[in-house]
Structures are given as structure tokens and as C-alpha cells.
Image (cartoon, rainbow, N blue to C red; front, side, top):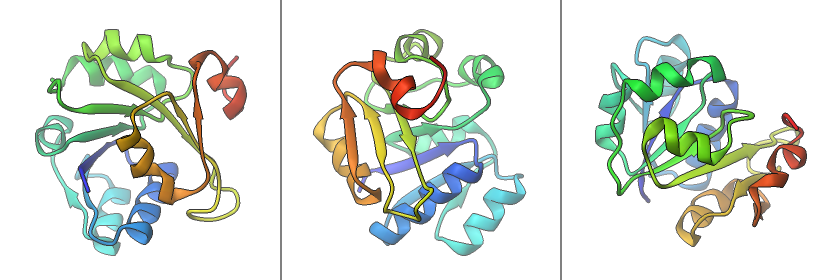
Length: 161
């Protein structure tokens, strides 16, 4: 499995981490910020690494999942540098892939939405169009829906329209 970094640990990413470790017990997950009480709690429950800042996480991983408030995205993107070989996956609502590409100066950005109303690894996982490797990564977390056109993403996920 690829090494996964999560920038912004919240209730949704907490479920995502639990799902990864349930589906793939040897997952390698890195969390930022290390000073977050939620990140520390997850590191005690699962074999996650907590690092001091977002760039430290980015330097360790192949896949970066961001889950921050939309109003902090600009600050985050201005403070990090991604490698072209990495994939950026966004849980940030209402921010199109094109905007993410511009903000992070990165060619490979995917939007993701998880619906955990029915429990871990049983609810829909919605992705904008992406390669098979990313689809395989998220398919153990629940029924996978890959949208060919991003234009329907927000209406499919119940987000901004």
C-alpha cells in the first residue's frame, strides 16, 4: 500500500483512518498536525505517525489527503511543496480540482467524499475521475462511485451547487 498523509484531522478523516486500518491493517498513515489532540488519540489507537507540520507529512508520503476548512486552504497551499509523483486528494467541500491544481501548483488532484452514515467501510465513497490505483485504494472503504465529470460532484455529494 502507498504511504498516505492526512493534513487536517477531523471527524471525517478519523473515520477514514479507522476504515483504512480495518481494510488494510498494515497501512502506513502519517498525520499532521502532531499537536492536535485528535491526531494524538488516533496515533494511540492505530499505528499512525504524527508529524509536526504539513510539509513533514508531505515529504514522507505518496498520497496526500487534505481535510481543512476552505478558508485555510490558501494558507496551507502556500506553505507546502508537493512532488509531481504525489497525488493530492481533497475532502475540502466546494473547491473544484482546477482550483486545487492552481493553489498547490500540482497536476494530479482528485476530489473525494465519504458518507459514513451507515458505519465504517459500508457507505458510499465518491471520487472525481482518477486512475485505477486510487480507486483500488478507496474501494475497500465502501461502494465506490467514480464520476466521469466533476461538474456533478457537489450535487452528488450534497455539497455546494
